[in-house]
Image (tube, rainbow, N blue to C red; front, side):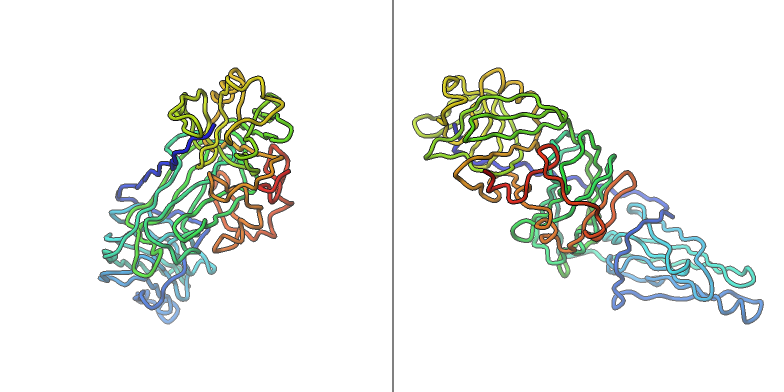
Length: 432
C-alpha cells in the first residue's frame, strides 16, 4: 500500500546560551583573518637596553574597538619574542585558539560572537628573559540581518547506521566553504566522511564514507554565532547536538526475487518472503533510509482511504513503507501486488518494526524503475566521489574522539566499502 499524503522530517533548533569563560585551549583549525576590518596595537618591553626594547606584542582587535566584525577573530603576535600566554574573558562561550608560526602568533579558532564584549590579556617573552603584557578590550557588532540553523537529529536520540547529519539554513548560503569549516564533529569511533550541499543553497549534510560503525556516539557543534553565511548575514547562536548510532539494521529487498534479507548487528537475521509494487506502481531501486514508523499508519490509495496498516516503517516521501500486509501473505514470495510498498508477513513486519530506527538502510534491487533523488533520505544514492564534488571544500573529514579535521581525499586509505554491511554500490539507484 502507499500513503498518498506527503510528510516531512521535523527540524529542531538547538542553540547554546552565553556564559563567561576563560580559554587557553589549542585547536587545529584557524579561520582566515579579514585584514581590512581588523587592526592591532603594540606594547614594547620597557627598560634594559636594545634587546629588551625590540620585544613587542600586538593584539587585534585594538583596545577600545567597537562594531568589530566577528570574522576577524583575535590575533596575538609577538615581535622578537614568543607568545607565552593568552587569556580571553567574555560574556559569551569559551574562545579556543592555536599557537603557531614558531610560537609567535596566536589566533582564535572560531568566529567571535555577535553583540559581545571581549577582554584579551596576552604575555610574551623575549631575549634576556624580558616579558611584556598587553590587554585589549573591544565589542563585536550587532547584525541587522541574521539567520537560524536547524538540525534533524534529536538530543540523545538513536539513529541507524546510514543516517546523515542534516542541517537546514533559514537564509541562502553563499560562503559555503566557511560554513563547512565552522563545523566540528566528535565521534567515539574513528571514521571518515564529508560535508556536502543538497540541491539549492540552504541544506548541508554530513555523511560517512561507509555506514557509521554501530554504537558510535556523535557530538556535533556548529560555530554559527558570528559566522557570516553571506555578506552581512550573521548567525547569533551556536548549534550543538548529541546522538547515538544504534544497532546495525540493514535491509536488501528484491522486487524480482520476492524476498527481503535483513541483517541485524552484522549477522543475517532473516530471509523473508515479500510482495512489492505491481507493474503500474513499481517499488524503485536505490538505497533509501527509514524516516519514521507508526502502528498503525492510515494509508490512502487506489480503492482505499485512511486504511489502518500495522507496523509501517516509511522510507520514501511518496509513501513507500515496509509494513505488515496480512491480506497478501499468499502472494508474498511469488507475486508483486502492492502499490509500491514492501509487503511483509505479520510476524516478520512486527520484528522489523520493533528494531527499526530512523536512518536504517533499505536497498531495493531488481526493479524496472529507477529511484528518484530526494524521494526520501536518498543520501546513499551518491557515490563517495559525488559526495566530495558536492562539498565546497572538496575535502574529506576525519572524525574521532578528539574532534574532526579536514584532510585531502587522496590521503584517506583505501576505497569506500561496498559490501551490504558497509555501504551500497555506486549508482545503486540503478541496482538490478
